[in-house]
Length: 334
Image (cartoon, rainbow, N blue to C red):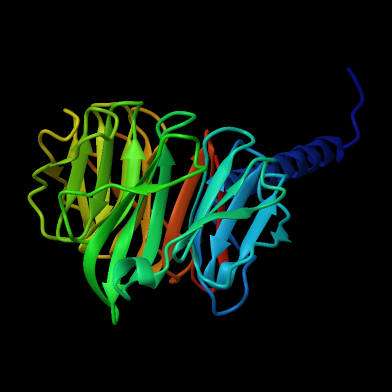
């Protein structure tokens, strides 16, 4: 018969329980870390909005905001460094057509960089004298190819919109010409699926579409009068658009038909992006964040941890960033 000390089994039990407890706590901590979702930090000046965010890849990105605020990261948003742009107007949009050439819109001006965002130079400013004393505000810029690009915005007098503005370049942004749009309403966002197919969204439920590379634009019926602030196409067929009071419309035929999607939130949605054929995100006022896993048919509200308005959204693979009021940046990693 083997000899065992009377307390040896008890010690082994205690040791086993301790090891299991450590593993349990580690597992819970890891799970909690994985479920933290959107982590917030303030990178802009207090009391000022961050309006737009754009990432070239998982490391290099920019945010732009009020009073010409521009900041850059080279480590996926862990740290940020302020960049100088000769403007004190709000930066409304940032877009790179490739790794070196980028554009930003600030008030009535277009700025460009050709050195990966190291320096930004003004290439065009639209003065009131060109519009009978009215003011121009530029909102969104996109390129369909290396040479061809568009900018949309509004023309206003005493803060009342009197016309839209649609600008076009065919020389890589060196010069910009005005093109008449089939709408005098405020135009807010533009997106291209390829060099032929593009869409513009705006006030009063406006969606304009082109199938000939921007030579002509025609209205699409959206079934809503809500302002549509943002549109994103996964292909030349599948698209999502979001707007006022929780408005979401979806198309699977390039916008020939737009179907309204009912969601619980009544918050105005300001930005939307596909991550894959099925996955997508949307953000908006009051810290609203929604997620879809079925190509936009249904949406689930997510916890953002803020009540600040969220104006811009950008995902690269499984990493995402959202920007908003009071210099707020949210960062998400799956």
